[in-house]
Structure formats: C-alpha cells, structure tokens
Image (cartoon, rainbow, N blue to C red; front, side):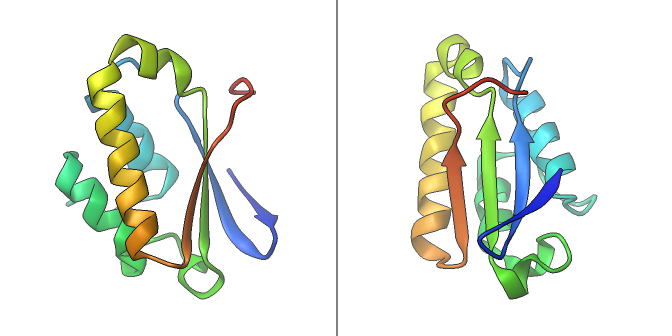
Length: 109
C-alpha cells in the first residue's frame, strides 16, 4: 500500500502474523517490490534499504517512508531477531537521508 505523506513515497509494511525472519523478509520483499535476487537475509535487507535503485518507482525522487505496522507480536516472539531488524532499519536510515522508517504503535489495520 502506498500513500502520499509529506510528499514522500510511503509504503506500509504490515507484519501482522509474522513470527520469524523468513516471513519478515517475504513481507519486506513484497511491500518494497524488491527484485527476485533479494537474498532474504539481514545483509541483503540492509543493502536494499540503502540502495535507492531497488526502491519502488518514484521513491528515489521523493524519498521513501516505510511505516511498519503489526510488529509487536514478532518483537515479543523473537526479541533477538527483532532487535536485529531494528538495527538494520536504524543503520539504513542513518546512512540514507531520503529513507525514513516509522514503527506504528497502533494495530495493523
């Protein structure tokens, strides 16, 4: 799902029902329409978030905002994995000024 928030290309990453890394990677891949060669591991995720050439069309020009919803059950089920995911998101944002990742505190709907 995309919408226009502050002129940025916005993608909602809905993690409802995700309880493991493989499902997280599948959701990210679908939400961002990543290429088939996306490796579905932490390094590949970091690389894809920092590489505007693999972002959805129009995102590089406007900036990319990823709104993560429904993440709390995953964070509770796999706290170590979730900390790694948060670290990957934070590092990508730190090194990519046109990227913002927001963790929504409400439900997934």
